[in-house]
Length: 498
Image (cartoon, rainbow, N blue to C red; front, side):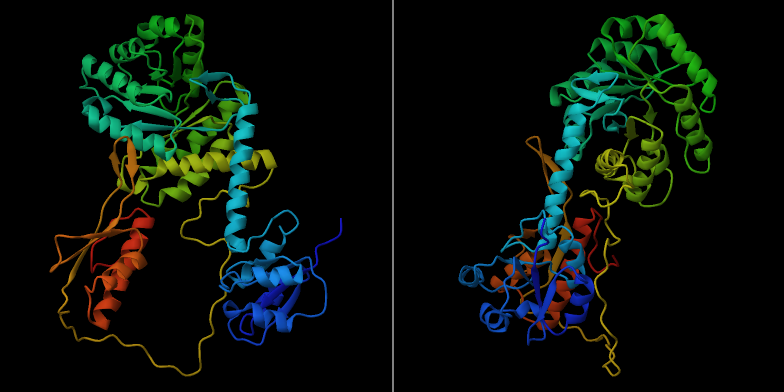
């Protein structure tokens, strides 16, 4: 196949970066303008070399109307990436990507790769073989690792509280909903919790308790999985579990005792329990994490088939570090151990969003295994703070004015503003995303709600609610902090450090 003949258009300031990024992947045309984004159809027409190209890539931030020029030339004129440093990356996909006259190539490529990644993941899941299937959810074998989200103390919740929590977890990507049952939960409350959960969702349900009476009640109510069985309760619950073919998570009698795990699995099978999931118990960091991972490895050497339960939440909940990176590496370890259920309660504030993180990680690990590659460049990623590719930094000028803040403050006659964030809420069975809420002390009965600093500030200016430049600058800073907090699902307090 003939290689595409591509012309990349840029301005003087970005010329060196463009040439370095393009390398030999395309020709570069440097226009007689400083900023590439100011490229116009007329300027491009005047400067074009007398050569036939298969494609002309203009800067991703160019806003001119190029369809007329495209028709005149008979050559597609399309938007390249927003940043010159991304050109090499974008050009590497030029043979299989249909560039757009409206969407910058970097955004188009990200969306295309993400879409392809999910299509492939769904295809792999449909083709996967698994030893256990619950309500059409495959568990084990070469299926995707499933995310189990625990609702702590579900039995004590009101029906509305439990319903909202289930809707939230399912929206976040939970494949299984686990109902955590405390020791003081009554049998009636167990049944109510299971029946309420079943009325809300069709995903598999599990119950998390060692109490035999609670387990038996949950099985009668139609639970799909029971957590957890060992030598102390198997005999008391086996009859109903066998009757309903309920899946059962088997644990050792003591967390570090892998032999008792195998003994309990053997006892369960001998009694007639068939749908078994093994849990060697993942320990928290500082309390045997490495040894517990070693037990998982030992289990998999001795048993290649039984689905494995992996309690990622035991680690994320008990370390003061951002959960997203921890969940990514735990999911990588789980993949290498052929684990099949990733468990998290998302209980503490610092572990918020763990269900979504584990779901994304499970998809990444499935695609990674399919490609036989490291979990990178998949079209799906968990990057939040760090960058995949850093943009070009500016150069420090030899002389400059040192910025200095002013101590002066003047009240704006148009009034001051109170800025707050709302949390995600469940309404009519759907998640309503949080927003930035701004109230003016003069116009306080009509608050402004939005998701971006720009939208809110534009509305404030349009309504004439601000009259001083210093106030506008302050408000822009605070609203941007609020927007970032909203994006990262953090709390926000006006005038406090982010």
